[in-house]
Length: 116
Picture 1 (cartoon, rainbow, N blue to C red):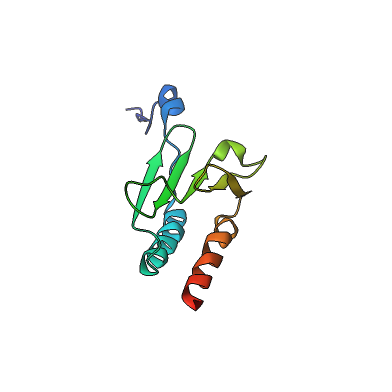
Picture 2 (cartoon, one colour):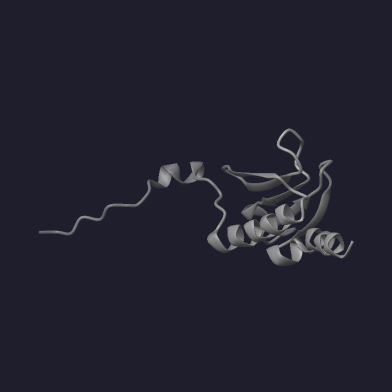
């Protein structure tokens, strides 16, 4: 009796798959979020995973626009870097392939808040 191979996903559906946040990336983002909540800076967050990109946005208040947004675009891995840090007004603050280095400007602000 020949073995039957069952694919985990259909190759025709590969184009509709989402860009995921990996567990270490989410752990890093949620660690920063928790520290910013403890400092009283952030109160809400949003995670979205779409076909071309994944986003993590942090809000001062739920009704506001996001204070910072981290965008993951794997298609830019070999070009500008797959991660981008976007400010409140839509400006790109930093790009790169290292998520920890990308979050340094936000963490630097956290250190200033603790010292004040």
